[in-house]
Image (tube, rainbow, N blue to C red; front, side, top):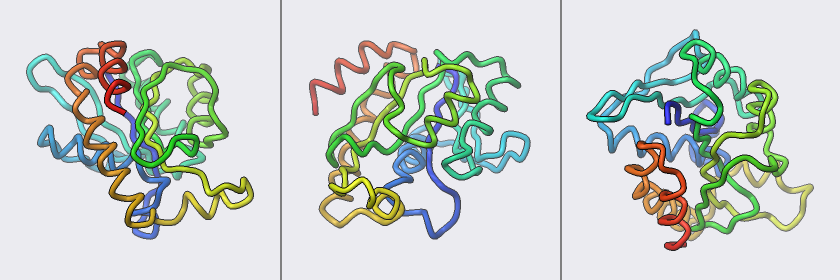
Length: 189
């Protein structure tokens, strides 16, 4: 892997919302790797380069708001010649319950506007996604308000546990062994 992207919305008003699960995951990974994300205007996001042992990759949190995440991702990818199959996008997932985290390759975008924009900018849906379950409000008309609000206490605990559990597969992800990472992650959830 050469790029790990956490999706979310910038600003304090969105910091603890369900939609920022991707930012939260990347923040935890940055802490684990002892790196600091810094504003990088040319990439429209917060970035950190990780060069440790056998790892040489970028962490990215687009600061373009969710619907324009592809601008940040494609700019960094073009600059560093990173291919879509070398990317993992970490994002909130309505179709998974809180506490569930799944890794998948390509496929549908599930109505996720951040994924839609990344796929449009890259010209493909073929990239890895780490999906962090946030649950569904039950009514599709309530989705926008739901994802832009903080999770209830019990849900937040489950989401945090899923993030911690998914960080256990970091060694496999860093090596690009996503099949092994998927097997390990999916047998634990």
